[in-house]
Length: 386
Ligand code: SOE
Image (tube, rainbow, N blue to C red; front, top):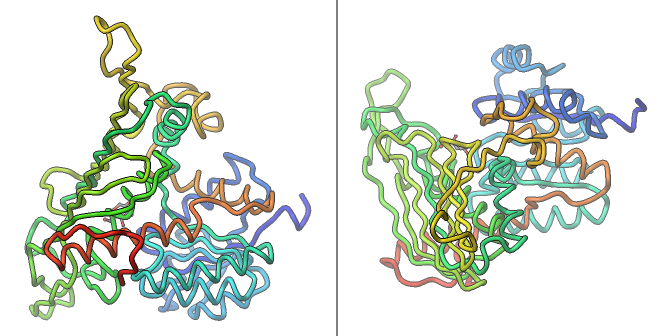
């Protein structure tokens, strides 16, 4: 393997998402053998001791405590941003301008303005051969990649309905502590941007259609939560706990979306159902290896939803994994994401989802917030909402 077959990676942030990305960087080269192969050069975090411990645990060769220094390093050719949304624009734009490829966690930014600036930087960088991608990892669930293929192949006919939900319950306890995800300054929004962003992106990905207008509402159920510094004091929750909205798609479908962290008993129930003139598909991440398909062209007497087990070598990404039927999990979606990014870098193509895709999602989120503030007024996505 030559030097050109390797790509030095530097990652910023090392909590949940950083750990998931690290696992993927460690694995992707061995399972998929992409060109270039990633080299885990450096991990960056603010606290030297904690970052060093994390780097050893997660498999990074060295440590930086200043992301600007990370970007300057010649052995860092790709910057992977796993920090809260408020720092995405500054790091991503600086990295792209320094000629580094960028993978940025979702949502792309905390506002349309910031996402636009990032997309402009990505477009300028692309002209110089620098690639960027936003981390909507669920596009890489084999069953969902298969769903997209089936829709594109016309197996569903004309799509009439999209029903998308992302249901979690991890803060249903009002005494569950404050965290950055509940702070608007850092996270941009709550359930809407954190998990609603995924189902907006997936709807665009699977149907190939854009969301043109929305009518939405958001709600915060618990306004104050204990700080986790042991002081006994409470902090203010400044984001939504739940969001719901109706939408129109440019291919003529109508859609309903729901994103909540208060769906008691639902852990990571990301669900998508499509109804078309020729058939329907249904997916639930809690059974992520399965895709339900109803084919309306089948004999009416025996037609019905049947379960496709998306674990076969014919299915997206599966050829590289286990023998048929052995199934994949959450972490594999990140491995697939890194594989697609590395392959695009190797072939000199712009990978998807692009920063422009991240911006399109951000516009929908902003329109939902606008509609909610205006008491569910119908809101065109194409108008600029901040
Ligand atoms: C928390 O709600 C979270 O970790 C999201 O931030 C992720 O994007 C989602 O995949 C799982 O839930």
